[in-house]
Structures are given as structure tokens and as C-alpha cells.
Length: 428
Image 1 (cartoon, rainbow, N blue to C red):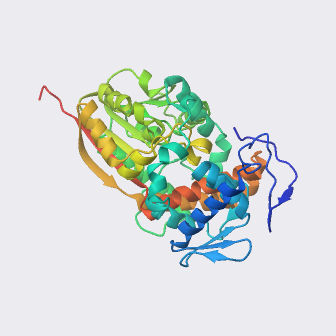
Image 2: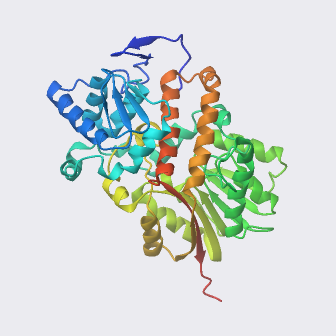
């Protein structure tokens, strides 16, 4: 999608600032704002200014005027393009406007946290009721059918193992860590990732001889730690890049006899297991396939077995309001994805499986700190990212993705849960 050769730095001029060159061939949605009618752009501008003026931030426009109640600064460098994009594509336009350099912030997370905290009421109520008419719908070809799921996963996880290595810690764990205290420091991240993994393995009672199914391999750290306990692990992934590196790490650790990593959709899993673990996989499943996903956990789990799940969640009412909407995150970062709510997870488990929710623990603040550490490391290594062939537009996109996600957790709009599901043994 976005892997491009590095090129000499060039800029185009906006209203008052130089902004990065955007390769139109690779970034057709970013290279130029939509040709919106003046009236529509003006109306959007009035609505946006009014919304920003009610928030605890300061939005400063290119002409020097400001709106907002005071707080973190949001600099709108090219107001016409900014309003035209939002008027045409809503939050997709907001993200593309940042990628194009039309707005920025000295502390990107701070204004995004304010916006996330007010996500439910940013859009006026009358427009909220008309959401179905103006909001883009999710593309049909991004539904997570077995064929589409492979392409969706590949667009993110097969970008480059080298890219992820630059900003993840040595465990290559791409999910929330679990810290002992805050603020978190980079040199504590590996221990915090191990703490999170060990907690999931403990919940599922993974030990010597356990037959463990892992849905979503990542780069293999959970499988490695489970195998080191004496478990026999079958791990499933749809990412060829991840599988190759995970297998290499497993071989290097001398655990190849205990771990099998299969390029396999969760719906194709077979066999019976004492435990199932899945870390931040459900977010990529899609609402229509949640029942299938949880039935897979149920069907693969032996009676008396336990399943441990880590999941990012969002408020139920926001999930219902936005579940059919095509978002910036879906377009550029995780195609086909949708975050569930706690209510949706527990209702799906209740209505479609024989599993029971035995425990749920939330730790969203830990994810905010995890994302901060990743974002800071990504920023520090921007030159190395560029050397891999990722252009300035990609780097702004990835920075916004990490900051946007961090802001979601800092505001409480997003959370992360660890679930324990139990399957009763009818013979006992």
C-alpha cells in the first residue's frame, strides 16, 4: 500500500507554511483536497469552528484568529483545505489533512485527547441523526471473509518486519504492556510485556504438557514463553512476514519441537486444546464474524478448558453509532477492523457459545503508556524509517495513528480488557 522509495525532500506551499510533498500515485486521497463547493466548505468551516470553540483547547488559524476555551494548541495551517476535507469525508478527511500537513500540533496527543473525550458530541445532534446519509460506509470488499481477511491483515502486518523492529521492544510484542507503575520508561517495557503475557498464560493455566492454541501469532513472544513452560503450542497467523520471523525466533530459542506456527485463518483451526489464548485479535475480525470467532474458541477448547483473551474496547453506544462507518483507521491502518464494546463481547459469548465469563480486568492507562513509548521511539528513528523506503506522508500517517490511539486511551474513550472464559466439563 505505502512502501515507496525515498526521494529528495520537496515541499509545496500552503496558505502560510511549507508542507511535505505528497506522491499522488501512492497517496491519491492525500495529494490534493477535494474540490468542494465554496458554500459547502464555508458551512463546514462554520460548524467546525463552532465545535472547536466549545472545547478546552486552542485552535489557531492561519490568519492568526483562534477559537476554543484554552488548552493544548491545534494549528490549522490551511483552513480551506482542512474544512473541505472534513466536509467531504469527515474524520477520514481530518486524518488526510494531517497527512498532507494542513494542520499540526506542538504536542499532537494533547488536542487529540480533548477531541477523543468529546467524540460523542463533536457533531451537532441534527447531523448525528443524519449520519447514515453523510458518513461513508465501509467498503464491501473489506469484509473479513476468509479471502478478504488475508489481504486486510497483509496490508498492515506485512509492511515490513524491519519497520516494526524499529519501534517495538526486543520482544516484538505489538499489544498493550502491563506496567507496575507510571510513568513508564523504555527500559521497563520488555518486563511489562512479559508481565502481560505471563498473566494471560496464568489465567489460562498454561504449564507443562498444556495443549495451547494461540489465535494471532504476532512475532511469536507468547508462543515462546508458553513453550518455555513446557506447553505444546499451535499458533495461527495470516501474516507471512510475521510467521517467517516468529519461526526464526522459535528455532533460535531451541523450541521448534514445541511450537507450530501455521499460516491459517482461525476459522480453519482444527483439534482440541486445553487452553486458547488470543491477544488483540478480535479487533480485526469484524462485527459480522464475532459469533464465528467466539464459537471457534468454544469449539477448539476441550471441556474444562480455559480461554484468555485480550481485547481493545470502545463504549457500546459509540460502537453502535459508528460500526457501519468507514473510518480513517480502517482506510489507512487496519482495513476491515472494528473495536467491540464490553457489552458486545459478553453478549456474543452468551448467545453463541457454551463459554462463561469468569473474569475481566481493564487497564487502559497501561496502553496509553505503551503507545507513548512506541510513538517516541518511532519519532526518534524517523531517519531509519525513511531509509527503509517509507516516505514523509507514511511517517506522518504512522505518527498520527500512534498519537490518535494513545489519545483514545488517555481520554478513556478506548480501553483494553483481559478476559478469562471457562468451559464447563459436563462429566464432572
